[in-house]
Length: 193
Ligand SMILES: Cc1cc2nc3c(=O)[nH]c(=O)nc-3n(C[C@H](O)[C@H](O)[C@H](O)COP(=O)(O)O)c2cc1C
Image 1 (cartoon, protein in one colour):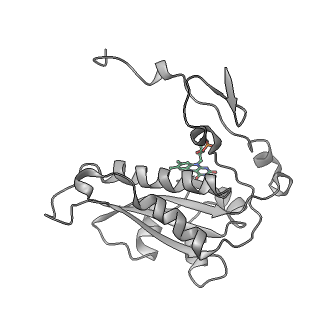
Image 2 (cartoon, rainbow, N blue to C red):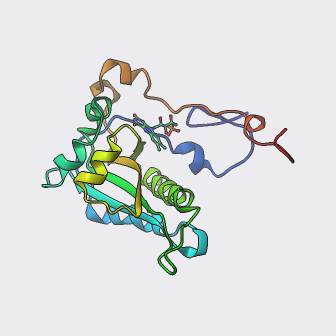
């Protein structure tokens, strides 16, 4: 079996899928605005129902007035390692279409595609791009003044790679690319039963 990034690959795929993973070790260095915009450009080209593009991203760069507002949304576990991130992002999705105000069934699905584009772009640029659900969703909505028509989906920490040794001990032990279920565990031909 082929190995990419210490992961067993069952069928031939583009290496970028298995090369992407979610490290926690970051150096604390800044990333450039150019790099940040490259990530959003990648997100921009995601497909979506009716090309509605329901994804929205709010961000805060370290050492700016917005940083503390974003950082303080996180649970303590995530604060421990994201303190060395360069940028924190809150990902939102618009629940209705702009063209007719009707509910969009796929707002979260489409926004997931945009986040994955962003993550793959970051990975190919040797940046850490790490998704998070460990934060206070209600506080995010309130503190970031998010209107009711938008759903808070997740946060993302972005930064330059750092040293594993600088992480707390229990995180060092988890700092490796994880495995996946077998295809048969999540794919079935035909009906459910
Ligand atoms: C939506 C989402 C939420 C996540 N939440 C957290 C989190 O709060 N804290 C954390 O350390 N990792 C978080 N992760 C990282 C996952 O644990 C990680 O993506 C998963 O174990 C697969 O590993 P890989 O990304 O390295 O392939 C999250 C990932 C995603 C996509």
